[in-house]
Image (cartoon, rainbow, N blue to C red; front, side, top):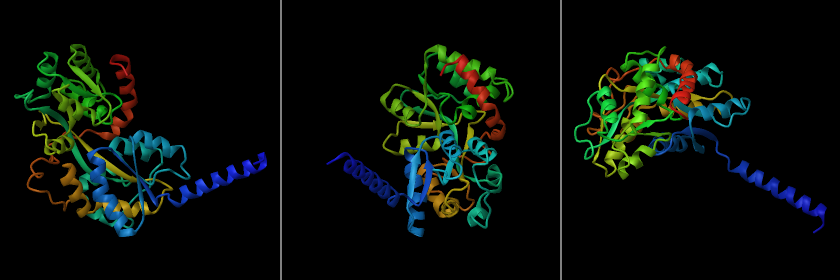
Length: 343
């Protein structure tokens, strides 16, 4: 084959590959967290949407800030149509103009979302559900778990157990650890140094491991590398039910920080995103999701099983922090963490 023929053949192959990719491209691209969360998300929202509409959905995994950066890099043709995240990342997306307003005209099931939960979206999304960020522990290794956060810190420093804490790269660290410890130890969201001081003490004790992805604490707890971890309640209970009865969970006093998971329609993304969000807002979808992942749902009509009902957090029992304030302060907190604790 001469050079010109080779070039034409190569070009034809590339064109055919591109056409194949285009032909198999999904109708809608949504994001999800990994592990049990993704499995529940697919079963309760993605599959019903595909069945109702006949459209295909591509689910991509990652982290909210990663998705926000990807969308910001191509706002005219975003690679994502519907994005999930926490309230603080959702606020960043809203402020950057990356997401679209929603109402009952394009998402009719919004009428059944609890008003206090709906308010967190500021008209640009809504929480699917929320979980608390408390303590997951081994019942064998820690038969008498700490009842307060100060008991947890003191016990860790004393070597009563080896604990896992979220590192600065983890999605819940700003609110669930830095903000929480700041307030527990006499600081505030304007002065988080008292909280960072306690984290530094725990680090120096040698009885702490930092993690950056959600499956690490589960693996470490089951292998005996750690005895306890700051972790989300629903994921802990799901692991308990998956033939791991040794795993326990509790919310130390004065309470665990609540984490609502926000869903938003990306600006310039497919209009199908509104239909998908309507499935996410439905009582049927959220009942399925909440009972699988064991988080407290935002739809007021959700029904919980007898097993799950006593486990899900109640709105008034959780610690709710001002997410819009935290989103503004997080860059400063990250810088302080990196200088004092390490990357």
